[in-house]
Image (cartoon, rainbow, N blue to C red; front, side, top):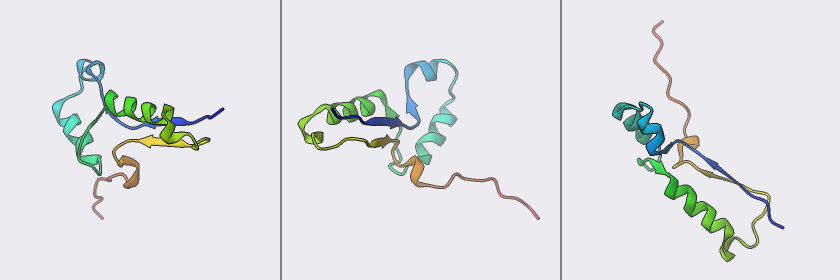
Length: 82
């Protein structure tokens, strides 16, 4: 038995966009990604497909972060005037 976890980052979905996500917010999420692209459900599906495949047969107990590198960067902070 293998047990792994997929930890998705910010993803574009039609539902999120339909609920009022602005184009500026989407652009900001894209800029936050090291890969400079926005993830989709397809990206998560490919991660699941990999973990179910024979290529991952010796992988267990892992958390696979699928976020385009967003968590590799420190969050941007507004500059503070002193």
